[in-house]
Image 1 (tube, rainbow, N blue to C red):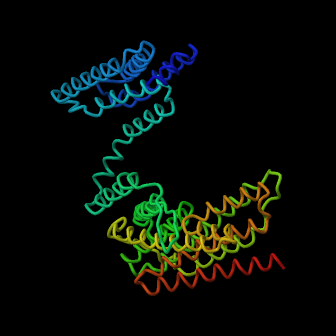
Image 2: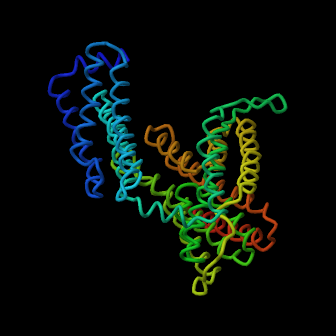
Image 3: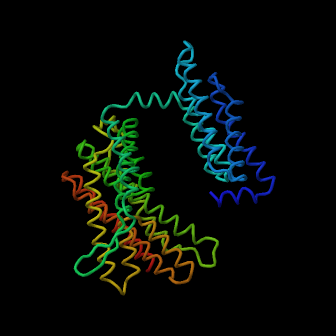
Length: 429
């Protein structure tokens, strides 16, 4: 509190005045929807409440009387909100105005945040709150349209992402055969969250667009986490075995997205610098991208893609099982990095590809720009990370009980690797 107090006291007058003006403007912004909806409290009331929060915050910091004044202001706003809620309850027209009452307290908080110098936080709260008010009908329709299974999946995802993930340690050490391996539980669990999140998006897209939606999931999911796409497709194939060809195509498109992302990093971040553009990566990565798109277009009959009814957005058991398999792969990757000390950088690129090839690609580009790596070494590291990502997806897909699915993933992943290798040989020759 003292640090914030000094910041406010020492600030020039114009900065303080601008914060007060911004607080009032954000209050007007919050009250705009309430005014349009003809609620008891509108633009003027909300703006005054935000100004009240800003004034009380500034006065508290400058006089050093403590937080009592801020609490008193909050209590006054709560009382006013309760009176409005009771008035709405007694009225036959408006009903119980709980949303307006809570919004008034949010406006007070926004004014306090802005006055305390937390401008970005205050603006964020105001914008998100306004969206919640404006999207009232859409949010209600979405909630009312959820089935019991969809509601349960949404709750499970919230537990995975917002309850368990923050509780996990960032890093632990694992003792195996006299070797100490650093592991990151949050990174491993983040893969479980990614599988569940992509599964929910896949459920929504496929429910709307049928099999063609799987292609969208594969490619755009691959831009975020191509490995997590495999976990989603494993669940998809378990629910609908007849959609295996679409799931294979999705994994291929995830590989294409991953290679395209790595290529964009390799070329984009070496342009305009003192080093030459890393053109060596274009041909092999370009071959992987083109082959992945071509095979995906041929293997799945997109013209016959009809609606696909999935049982649930994602399976908790499948997501956890995928996380366990991913942990095993990660341990073996760390062991490989430890054993191959002379080829440490390349081993690191391979191990990084298990999680995200983008990290290894970025590291290689940074070292290349700094002169620590030549173009050949940087390109090899990027290709190793890309190959590692393709291989690990095939390994994870091999855990599926669907024989055709895992066989096709292995076969077409081999074709991608072969095409990229032949393209690399042609460049060298």
